[in-house]
Amino acid sequence: MLSPKTKRNISRIIPYGVIWLVLGWVNLFSQEAVLTAALEENSAQSAVIRMTPTVFIFASIAVIVVGLLVGTIEVVWLGNLFGKKSFLRKIGYKLVFYTIFLLLIILICYPIAAALESRISLFDPIILDKLWNFLNNIEFTSTMVSISFSLFVSLFYSEISENIGHGVLMNFFTGKYHTPKEEKRIFLFSDMKSSTAIAERLGHIEYFELLRQYYSDFSDAIVRHSGEVYQYIGDEIVISWKYEDGIKNNNCINCFFAMKEALKKRADGYNNTFGVAPTFKAGLHVGMVTTGEIGALKKEIIFTGDVLNTTARIQALCNQYNVNLLVSEDLVNELESASKFQITSLGKNELRGKEENLELFTVRHKC
Image (cartoon, rainbow, N blue to C red; front, side, top):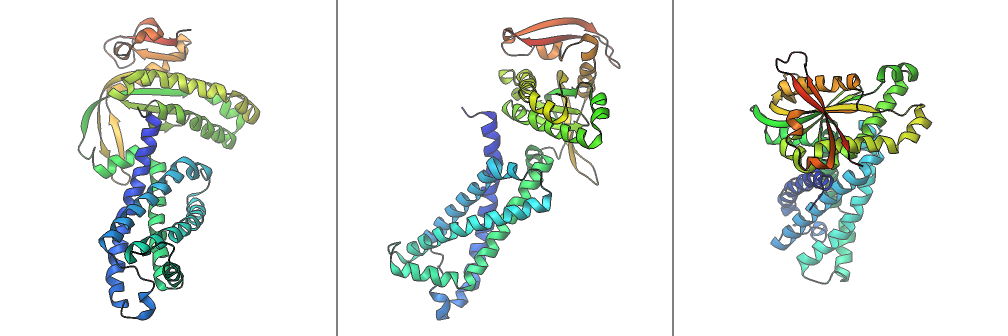
C-alpha cells in the first residue's frame, strides 16, 4: 500500500513524462518531415536516423523515461536544492544541470536508435561513425534545441505547480471545479501562539524567515496525512481534506499531532536561530462546502460555507480553554477508532453567529 507522500510524488512526476512524450512526438514528426528532403545530400545520410516503427517505439519509450527521470530528480532532489532561489535563477541553474545530464542521455540513446534502425550490433564501427557525424551535424543542434524546449516547459510547469499547488493546478487543467460543486470536507485552522509578541521581538524580516521555516516544517506532516494547504494567512494556516481522506486512519487528527512533533524536533534549531521555539493551537470541524473557480483578474479555487467560519471560531476558543486542540462534536462522532485518543468534552459552546450551541472536545494521544 503506497503512502500518501509516495502517491503525491508519483502524481507530481507523471506530468513530466506526459510533457516530454507530447513534445517528443512533435519533434519526431517535424524532424522527419524536414529531413526527408535532406536525405538527398550525402552529408546528411550518415547522421540521420529514419523513423521506422521500431525507432518510433524506442524513441517514445526513451522520452517518457527521460521525462519521468527529470521529474523524479526535480521532485525528490533538485527542487529542494534551489528552493530559496529566485524563479529565473532556479530555471537557469536547472537548465545548466539538465543540459549536461541530457547530453549524456543523447550519447547513450543515439547509438541504440542507430543500431535498431540499421539492424546491426551496437558496437559496430558504423555506429560510432554515425554518432560522430551526428555530433557534427545540424541535426545534433536541432535535437539539443528541441530537448532544451522540452526541458524549459517541464521546469516552467514545475515552478507554476510549486507556487499554486500541484492539486490546484491539476484541478485547473481538468476543469474539475469550473462548475461549482458541493462536497463534504474537513478543515483545520492553525494559529501560532504569541505571534504578535514574537513578531515585535524579531522584527519584520527575521519574523518572516521564522514563518518560512515554520510552514516548511509542517509540510511533511501534511503530505503524509493526505492534507491540502488551502491558505496561508499571516501566521495562520488552513488545511483541508476531502472527507474520505481526512477520516481515513484519522488523518485529520494525526496530522495535528505530527505537526506538533515536527516543531518539537526542531525546537533547538529555532531557539538557536531565532531565540524562540514557536508553538500553535488548532480547531477542527467538518461540513459541506461549495467548491469552485472564482476571480476575473486572478483565478482561484475557493471553498465557501458555514464550516469555515465555524472552524475559525472553534480555533479562537483554544485560549479560553487553555488547550492546543479543539474538535467539533460533528467530527468527533465520525472518527475511526476514537478509542485510540483521550477525548474530553468541554461542554456546549455558543459560537458567534450560530443559533445552536456546539459541543467541543479536546483530543490527546493516549499514553
